[in-house]
Image (cartoon, rainbow, N blue to C red; front, side):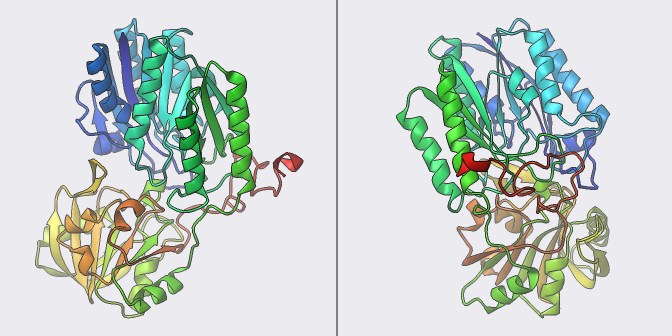
Length: 489
């Protein structure tokens, strides 16, 4: 067997002022054929898992380019078309192939392309023809369009949020692909439109039990190859916005359709109950300062670079300063210019510095302070599962009992190693402020005495009922109250 694999991924917040060009892919991950590292990034696990699987099978794996850019706004047209065509040319050169196994995100939007993944998959299908297996792993925070479903044989989606299972799901993807190629199964995929958009953290109920139910069905029914939920991505203003359920069965399309519908209606029946309780910055700081055990983690959840924001909001920091909080560490505030100023001053220098809140309205005001430059790291990185996420060049500054990490590469706060990489022991701090919606939970919950989800300012469009959509559909919850009528009762 000859299998072609590649990855092309980013997540587009269409409201973000920060646009993506090819340099952003090259800064995050650009790996030409055979150059992908041994450890996967979030959307490239099909490549590293594929190496292992094909080696065990004695098959030939032809690797195409892997490209990932950290989430932001609109993708430059030339950047998307250039990377797309690079991979398509590699696929043409690899022909004939028996399968194409891809790593995608699913929430990319490019200039001139509201559905880049649909465009990409359709072109792949045109190249390989109708008989060749085409499948992909997706991030649940994506848009599942009819065009993508028509072009692929099946999708497998991360089940967990935080996304701790992207390698496990890549293994599922390859297991189904191998069984298909060896004639043991015939995947039949069905999709159900839940007619809703919500946030589904699997670290709490009711989504925890729902995901456990999906895995229990897969384990108990041999004819069910995979069950998935596309959460949707509310910051993507696209026509097919919304939550979808996917069922993949062995040669049973009616069963797949029934399962997808039943599970989708179950999700819909629980609409509005999934999101964590959110508090504003004043309550978050009050509760953190009054806590009897430490450290307390304040998640500045909507200033999340993993959702395409800049990560430079200062609303929580300003509240901490106004309240006289000390023994606090902030990780991070994105400000490449401030990092350059700190690097020029050098470690140990005391300088006047203005930083933060430069990207957009709703992020607070820039902070002016006399700061000490504690540490400058040219290539700072934190752990994310088995891999690493870069956030440097970076600077650690200190003033009035507050430590702040300034970063150049936008990335959300995945792991406490964010702080240790800059010389800060997070376990000795009273309060930690991080920028992440929920990906932080798996690692930070191990050291936190309490976690406070803070909605501060307006850096992110987090209310679908009021977001200023121009293209997204308006016939789903919460834009309307009952999108399914009596069917969901």
